[in-house]
Length: 122
Image (tube, rainbow, N blue to C red; front, side, top):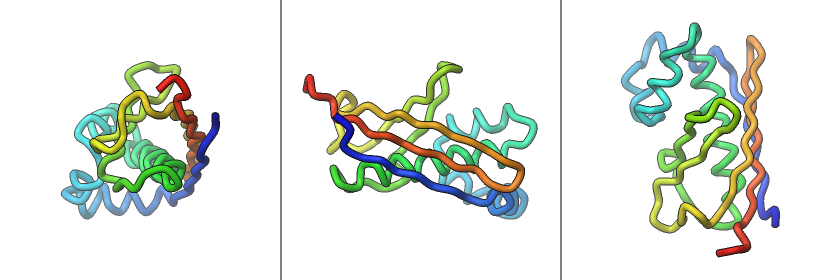
């Protein structure tokens, strides 16, 4: 059963400025795995913008279910066909929800959407 939807859009230039001028801030905004993944890309700030949008969209999709912080949302791409969402908060069980996340980019913007499904088998 779908129980939430979240979306976000961000300027790529914002994350390019952070990348260039405030790299220490990136370590507070992203998990090391997210930074390592972005670092494999030609323009890591574009990837980080998309990841940030995904994190925000997950947060918004959960807003009617549980209160969490963005620092507790990790986006993983171990499987090239699928984004994984890991919530680092004991209030959210790993099998409690399914997250369907999609990220898109243009040169200027990144956007993401998350459709949240409650796991009815729980």
